[in-house]
Image (tube, rainbow, N blue to C red; front, side, top):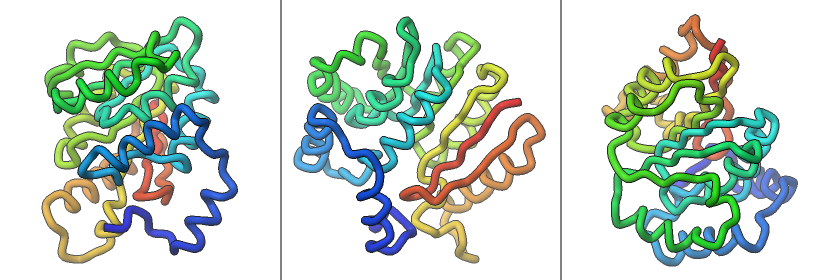
Length: 213
């Protein structure tokens, strides 16, 4: 399924006028497209550049990522960390996480990254408070639970980025399947949440940016 709402021509134009991957990141992209069953799950260069720029602007000490996959977004986000900062990336699939560890072992950014296997909803309550930046890209039907659990852990002024929030444009349909309805309700909840300000952007499959007040 197409993972962007833009026309192919407009999407290509956006990609062509955004900074490309470096050679090391390109190895992760190639691995993802040749060795995984769902390569569309990777953020990719266009969205990856966006994630990295947000992280570089925030200059976070503490990042949490829900959903590691092949580690591309973790590397991108980690590039904005302060020198002694940390990124915790949580992945439920143990086999996938093992492969990702091997894939990323030569990346310098890994000195600041901890890859944790398990359920995000079990792990979030154990995390330290004061999170500066969060990227949510895990089980779509648990998004609201992630949001509810992570908000109390956030630093004032912290940023939450939520991926796939437009769900292939299906949020616009009158008849919604359960996952689409869940994401649509989360968009509404965030927009009405007095604890945050937010902006929904149609980058690839939609990214909701949330700033905690």
